[in-house]
Each structure stands twice: as C-alpha cells, then as structure tokens.
Amino acid sequence: MTPRYTPAQITLHWLSAVLVLLIIALPYGSPLFQPLLGGGAGVFTLHKSLGLLVLVLTVLRLVVRARSSAPELLASEPPLQRFAAKAGHAVLYLLLLLMPLTGLLFGKRPVNLFWLVEIGPLPLSDAVRGAAKTFHVTAQYLLFLLILGHAGMALWHHHVRRDGVLRAMLPARD
Image 1: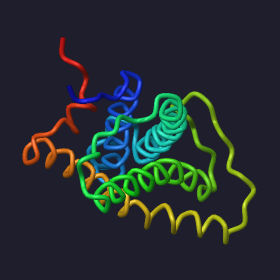
Image 2: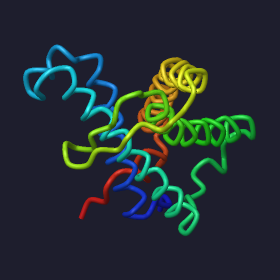
Image 3: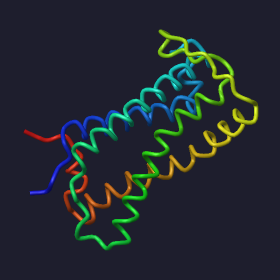
Image 4: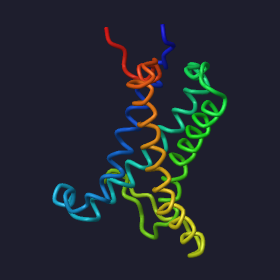
C-alpha cells in the first residue's frame, strides 16, 4: 500500500492550491471579476486578502509537516530526481511565504482584509517598496512555472509511472 499524507496535510494542500489559483486569476481576470467585487479595488482587496490567508495556511502547513513529516514516495527514484523534487517543494514553500509578504510591503495604501479589518501600510522607504514590488511581480512567473511543474509531475507520476505519488495527496475514498 502506498504511504499517504495525513488528512490535515491533504486538506491544507488542496485549500492552498485552490486559493493560489484564485489569487492568480483575480488580477489577470480583473475585467471579469470587477462587476462582482465592486471594481478594481475590490479585485485587489480579495487578491491581497487571499494572499494573506495563503501566508497563514503556509505557516500552518509547515508546522503540520514538521509534526507529521511527509511520506517517502520517491525512494526508488534516482537521487537527482529526489533532489529536484525536494528543491522544487522548498522553493514553492518559500514563494508561498514571500509573495504575500512582498505584496504587503510594496503597497502604500492600507490593506482591507476581506472588507473587515484595515491593515495600514508600513512606514518604508520607496527603495524598499520598489524592491518588494520588483520581487513580487518577477517572482510570480517563477511561481507559475513551479505550479505547472508540480502539477505536471504529479500527472506524470499518475499516468506514466502509475505509482502512488498523486494518490498519496488525494482525499481518501471510502
């Protein structure tokens, strides 16, 4: 039987995945979402709010992973492939932490968290704001590539290798 991630790890993974896809879709599909969210400001309110939620979920995921670890699913793979998988996951986690933080840092206006709580901008120099914005805007493309690679490898394991890598992260069927 293939080892599996814990139910908490599976839930946090898929919740994060859905939120990240929505976060990506919001600015790129802004004309579609604007009528639903009261204009461009509403689109970015939701984008930033969901980004902060992903930050919290990522920290929670790291805590859960430290307590539960991850099943060893690639033991039969070559060392270079295992290294690439671990490095890809590490960079993905790093970006899931840094993207929301840099998004917060470069804004000059308060963030309205889910239209409930306003978080004021930090008193930062224009240079710091500029660096945060440059990182945020540039790193999104690395995040896109990592997400595509991650999903592609999961599908490759499932359809080509026919091993249990993808099933280990899918909700259990009763």
